[in-house]
Length: 317
Image (cartoon, rainbow, N blue to C red; front, side, top):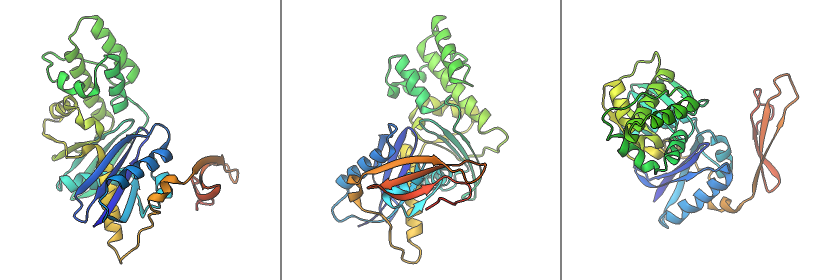
């Protein structure tokens, strides 16, 4: 059995997806990055190896996410792609005629416009945490509730209150103020859902032509309250694809499959044995010019195996 692996390394979570030759999902896992991307990648590979059938043969591997370069070096990726491309490919796999992709992850969000299956515009928010999964986790913990209960409880709202959602500080203080005024929790929660949808569309969707089908993916797409808030704001149905939380990894695996199908290429995958190899990361400032680029380097058993980060490519290996 020939399989293709995709790895999406984000700042909060790391996702793995294994596809068969028909690009059907065989296995996936979703792990907290915990500030230790190399250790989590190695742990994830051990988990994948434990769940693959004995006859499975990895024919290609792709990486994406903010840690895609690092992951690509560690595993020996055949394809290293940015998050926009991977998420667009993953969305189109489940909704082929998709024209708008909303993606909200743990610490950033993306907005992708496709026409005829091609990405024609996009926007990313990596600066403000308002409206991301991490902020929702924080609010659920503050309210002493499970994040899984957040969405269903918000849908019980009858009279949602308006929450200032442009900033996490303002949103949290506004929620506390509304609690002190005696508003019902479900009304405050759905008010936050509306604020998140409003903030997202005002920041990332401003000036863009938003056409259906609209796909909502990423971990936050599991929150049914946010889904409804987007549907009410856009006045259209929102489609949440299966495996929405690992769509980026699925897209990376599909891209690896496409790449390896060309000219009978042989995968660069280093094998599951890399799970036991010692990798270290360090960086230094290049003084060759006034740009003073930060150069990141990866060492395997004390030997430099990769460098990147410079604008001119002088250090890239």
